[in-house]
Image: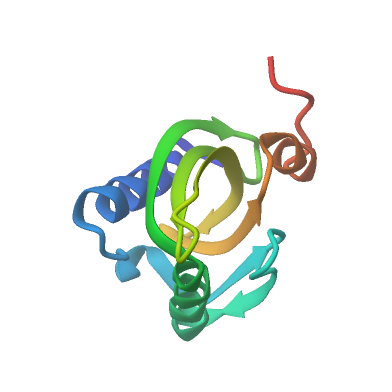
Length: 132
């Protein structure tokens, strides 16, 4: 990858977290998001798929915050670790966990995202060793 690809992921995270809006201009219209996390595991395709994924995710949570922690240029992909805090709808139970995504950027657009429940799973998918 390149510094440009890292900058795309940084900008995506910043705009999403600061404004609460998806920066659609950074997402390829044919983007594929593969969620490995239950209960919303599955493949989501294109802008409509991303909107559906967010709807599915939001259905379980009263509130969520996602704090980007780090980005690693892994050659063909960018690994992003995220600290996710969420409060369950109905239960009110709060959970905090570190999730991670493996992102592919082509022509200044995100073309593929894989969402993992753990950083270790994402590192393995990105071809990286254990975190140090």
